[in-house]
Amino acid sequence: MISLANYVMKGPVQAYLGTIAFALLAIWFTPIGFVAGAIIALVTLRVGVIDGLKVMTAAAVVHLGLSGLLSGSYLAGLVVILEFMLPVWILALVLRQTNSLGAALQFAGIMAAGGLVFVHLMVGDMPGWWMNLFNQAFRPILDQAEVAYSIEMIEQMSRVMTMLLAMFAVVLWFTVLITGRWWQGELYYPGQFQKDFHDIRLPRNVAIATAVVAIASIFFNESSGGLLGDLFGVLTVVLMFQGLAIAHFAVMKKQMSNGWLVGLYILLAVFPQTVLVLSILGLADNFMDIRNRMVESK
Image (tube, rainbow, N blue to C red; front, side, top):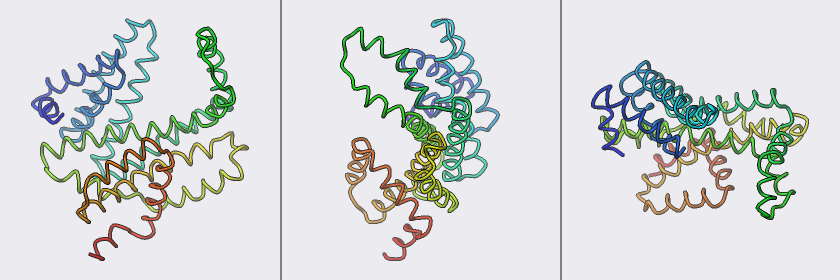
């Protein structure tokens, strides 16, 4: 991966070729778009905002054009651009201006929250919309294939699907961004990325907003059409990254085995409740400054 980053930073031609190549591959295998987004982030952070915009635009146009030509629809291509390209460039712009991963993370949450408000205003009944999509697009296929499914489980999923997608968007955008930041550190500032990640801090008003939204969602989530619950999910995953930063810092400071971090990420993958635990840790850090206490206690 570092060799790839080194290649695309040799010159503008290499940057365009690398980004466009991975954007094209994303037509057939969407996750490849992750690499294209990381290159866009790297170019934006290292070379400049306009250069990053040019690289992103070239990759987006080529990807959108070819995906539309092959499938007859531009929708799939647009999804990839909104997943891996445009939001990542915006976050890289924020990171370049602020030099703060915490500020970029906060803005990722703001973008996801804005998207939630927009879709709730446009659609209204999000669970009903997801059920309608299931009945029209997926149910006939499952019925024809005689695949057994629980309609109760589908209805339960429809209530949280919007929240899960918003949470996934924050995780994806920020992960692509920090991959670009990691490349930048490895190529030009060895060791700097670890310091930046360990120092991820969100403003205290994020913690306060999380507490307020959590309480409000208990009483008014149904009347808000599920919007408050969805917003709470986004705030939770934003604070999760601060909790992860604390965990990484603790392992480094206490000179513990990296196996602890491997175990933590396995827990994240297997038990979704781990997200809430880490977010509570991140929330507490806004009031207790846990990392500074670790330094003082040594």
